[in-house]
Image (tube, rainbow, N blue to C red):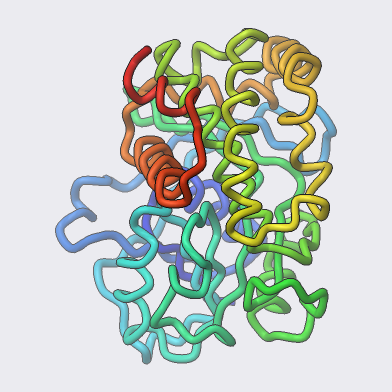
Length: 318
């Protein structure tokens, strides 16, 4: 298949390389004038969890094919849109007139109503998913991170239905992942799951502000417990937005047992490279996406009149 990755960030690069290695024709859209800035090669050091439960250390040099323009006649079979949630609406508006009828995988955090966030892309052209990979570029431009063996894929309209396999975008995305050796976990209530994930991220990012970055939370049970307690404050916000939290009991376990899960997560992040990789790469707690997650979740809580004192305190620096 001919696949377009929107941007050349961490998620786009990790999955784009996996797709290309599986035999797909993969290109990366970057802003005009950026091709020269990126250079030709990306050096990658990944913990690859596709074939080993605890991951396998891999090193590779990848030469992504970059482009600075998109035209409906380009004939892409799939467009992968993975950007910070604060840039999603802008990116969707940019893509809509340029990709024709190509299926679009929206692949990342969403705090808005999902269909509002990706307008004017047609709903029947979109499937929502979430990556199970992460990491960052170090000071030398090396991408260090982890790739787990599966991703999460939801219904194309992010509704509460279970008929996820009936749409072309879902079928295409599922096939591409399968060919790359990546499994798919179906999520019936993708809207609720995405909002819960943002709440969990808000807890992590708020604690990162307190300690100086996610990297400093590796092996720290107290910091991780604090993150899960902050996320717990946001559960009433989700309920007020119509999220049925009973459908997401497993995903919400850290907020129910913050002391226990904080200790277990700390131990795993200290002992297992695949659990540590995503946290260890993030040293800037004031990066654009973490700040946007914190600002947006706090704004929604205030609009709904729901108290979130831990989140407020983190943003005030107390």
